[in-house]
Amino acid sequence: MRVRFGEWAVRDDDACDAAALILSELVTNAVVHTASRRIICELCADTERLRIAVRDEGCGTRTPRPVHRGADEEHGRGLLLVDAVSSAWGVHDAGPGIGRTVWAELRRTPKGAPEFA
Image 1 (cartoon, rainbow, N blue to C red):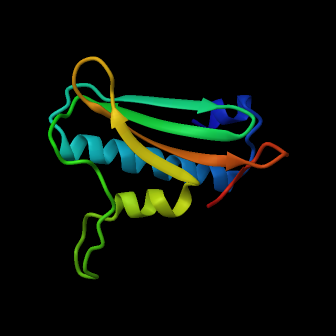
Image 2 (image 1 turned 180 degrees about the vertical axis):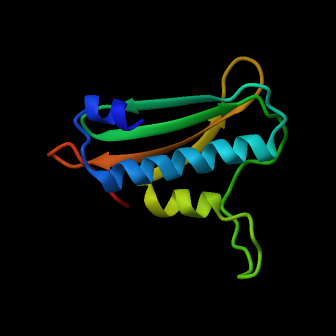
């Protein structure tokens, strides 16, 4: 991911760390909460934003959402972290077939580095 961001002129270590955290949380959620055999990760950039998206094959009626957990609980804060470091995030059906895509974005400043929410 850092190599790709370097190609896109994103040289800010904080931005790379935030993108790595987002990707890690979204992939972890897809693995833990779906029965997917395949998970697809997508990184995109334009002049205004960096976008991280994870598509899974999971199905069901529960839409991923942040949940506030007790201080002694070990799991369940991933989307709270994604919400805290991204400028926007969301969920949509993956299109034809089954599954959904969970995505998050980091806004880019005029210099090209992402800014945080």
